[in-house]
Length: 356
Image (cartoon, rainbow, N blue to C red; front, side):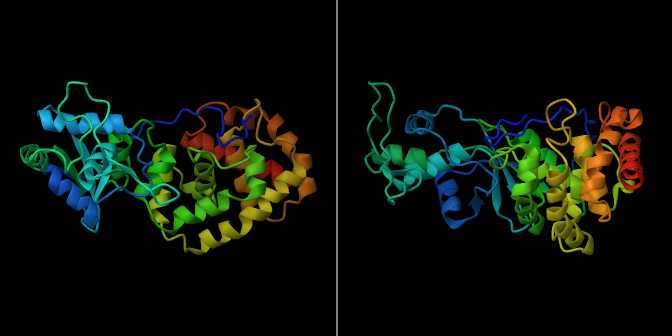
């Protein structure tokens, strides 16, 4: 059962690991710190919306600046060249922003009262000549050394046309090494941005849907949004499903970025009434073992989304029969993302929920 406080617990599913063909170019560069700071100011380097906020303490940022002043090595950063030729920070946000803040003379972003802390180097050795100094207070020689210091950047660009439209997804997945790594749906929101991102979040915010999942607020890792995407990705097209599920969801999100197709409209229209019907008919649904089983949820929900004629009463009567079905039970307990298992599960759900 979910803890109800923004984290969704589901039964584990074993999905095949996709074979990835990277259709990308990778080029290193060594920009000066002054150039990096100016690129951030101009919007040539951006910290995209999917990245978490700046979280370093001033002591951490101070040690980074000291490393540059002392000529010590600093880990490289990874930048993704988007379609507008902007550099999106995949990995290295804390380092890049710390550099900018020090040149600005102000640490971090403004608080609720629009105030910012003066960036004085802090937490260094007591004998350090840099302790307590702002950039403007450093000797001219040290200012020059800092401006001209370099940070190795790995610049990644997706080549078009791409033989694999999900290669960028795996770049983000492998290279984002922040304190809390991005989860699959968070990466999809970054890579396959478009109207579908807002549409899925809007559908996910439905109170009846959150009630089904046992959440008081949306899941912090967007596993609930991923379940909505899974339902949409199978709705009316599940006969086209091919494993692994991760790649199938990537492809569906990429193909439906605009979320403007008639199928998308039908899904968005039917979703609210279906989740309401489930809540009216079933108590703690889709939990054969106590926590949400995505395979059970997917089979029942897709069947209801595709078949308006199933009433709340019929669902209440037939759902226990579905769970009691030996064939269905097997299809939701092992190899749940296997191509034939998934299709068999949807067929069994249709047969029992429609025909009783």
